[in-house]
Image (cartoon, rainbow, N blue to C red):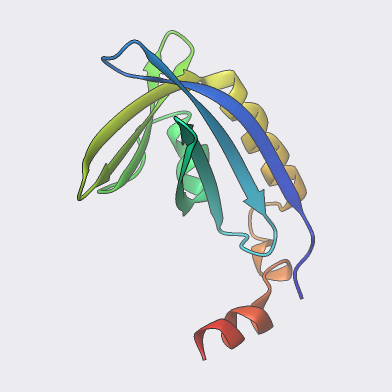
Amino acid sequence: MGSGVEVTQVLSMALVGRDEVISARLSYRGEDPFAVSVVFTVGGVHVQWTFGRDLLRDGLCAPAGHGDVMVAPAGGGRVSLTLRSGSGLAMLACDAADVAVFVRRMYAAVPDGAESTHWAIDQFLADIA
């Protein structure tokens, strides 16, 4: 059974190269302890991306990720999030301190190495069966 752990944080993210700010909501749930989701709201449309939580943590200090999702320090106290899909590429930037607060709260809720004690393995197996 899942742990009921949930950590969320709302951020403002700037689209790099454009004068546009997007609302984003970072979300971490103990039922899926290895992943973090970010939901972007643009013109009333919600777009969700899910990726490994360690990618967000590691990207605060050094470039992290390959392919579809990359996180990296962007200078000036910012962190960048680059997303690639068949539809194109989006590069966003936000305050690294805000992301660091979320990461600290997430790892306090489920410490590194303790993910398996929170994972809803029975539900996962039922979902894939």
